[in-house]
Length: 170
Ligand code: SF4
Image (tube, rainbow, N blue to C red; front, side, top):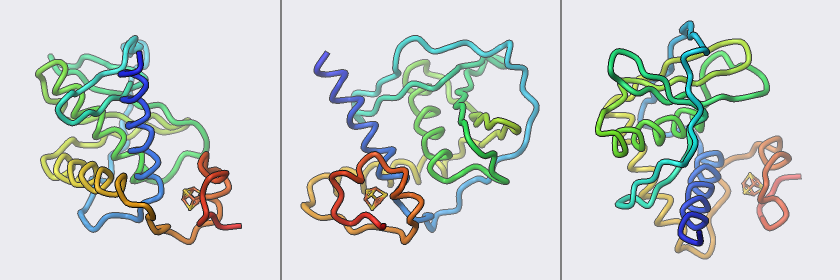
């Protein structure tokens, strides 16, 4: 149980780190609007886990399409014009975990916003950017101080770490 909790904590740290990171120089796939049939989506019972990367996460749904397993992440709130970077990286992590778990590489994943769905291609470039992010995150884990990477008050206002953060805005 402790093992799972630690793994979940690690993944939470990844997401926190991603959310506070400025847009990376590596180009991210922007995502394309698609129509999806939600009846085919199957809820995921247990988190997926990769012991080599010590990465875990639970997509909201998995859907099988043409022999491929596609992760689906559901987001609430305002539907953006294009997926947020943090959402793209989160989806990429799920694609990686699906490949590690089922031995089949998803060609893309789906981000479901309230009024629009985006397919985000899981390209080798996106995988490489994700691995870079994970490596950077692990390096930052061992640093006593990590500089705030943004000047956006609204991020801090919604941040779950603001109570412990000495760099919060407003
Ligand atoms: S409160 Fe701190 S950790 Fe949270 S977004 Fe602001 S600067 Fe980042």
